[in-house]
Length: 372
Ligand code: HEM
Image (cartoon, rainbow, N blue to C red):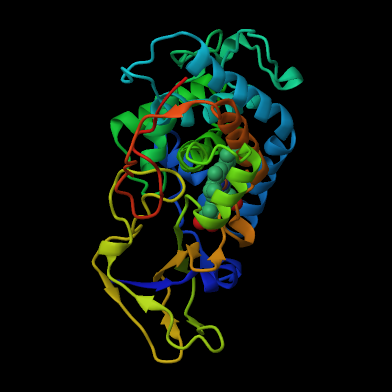
């Protein structure tokens, strides 16, 4: 039986820095597919392995210039809305969520990482741009984004849907393999790091873009920069994360907080198998039922117990997490979101009211139609 305790965001920074609370680990040993990816990325690793994978991720991200990402994201978003192409599924306008919010961040990052083949189309990402023919497998281009070929965003989304849960399907395994092929075909750590970045970025950045745009188009006096910052402060897309107790631990509630933690059963923890890399599906990695546990004055965690940590409630907000696993893509994500929102600033919002995906840990509009 697995025990789950839920903590508010006021405890998040301390809990996420606790050395014995680790991300639910991925099983090692697979040579390909989703299991291989999960076993080789920072997101599920701890200790020395995490340090090594994290170093690789930081190096890849460190080579990107946020300002260039912003400009390229704006250019691609503009192409979709003002490029004159009819965009599928949007009779009156463009559905930003389907055509831009997920597409653009993945494409901009893939280009910057040198994945896939990118044909020239003006606004360059300079020396970050790839041009290797051997990376062309499994690539395609998004409607409305002229001259751009890169990874299939659908493949990134398919992987993202099983990334946190580890639930492999033929489609997800095949999607990982198509991304490996787009990276040159080697199942090595750098390839895993690149794919991991795309998967982590996809839904979370789409959510940040969708939420910011929805707010911004109602109050167009705000600049994209201010709107993104305000959204991160008041309405961050990733609502919670999960850690597993690696040993027996007693976690004390914060001084003066009383019994502010709650222990909950999994109906509230997001067990749906579908979801995204960060935030939407936080699945139990262990077999068996979950139960609640609370101890007056603190929470006693046994090895293998799970802790659900809110990243946003009341005045406490950690939009990019905290501790050793805090989001390393913060600056890049903000730059891309600003670029897209800036480009769409003068569009008109057609979708009202806005509905949200029924995901417990990610706030993301289902549809956001705009017209130029
Ligand atoms: C360019 C886009 C992005 C990239 C490349 C990216 C990359 C990553 C990576 C690689 C990790 C795992 C780090 C580790 O475990 O050491 C991570 C974690 C995280 N990301 Fe991002 N991310 C992006 C966008 C976002 C956005 C827009 C948000 C929300 C505002 C977000 C929120 C988080 C959070 C909360 C974590 C920590 C999860 C945890 O501690 O369990 N990320 N990100």
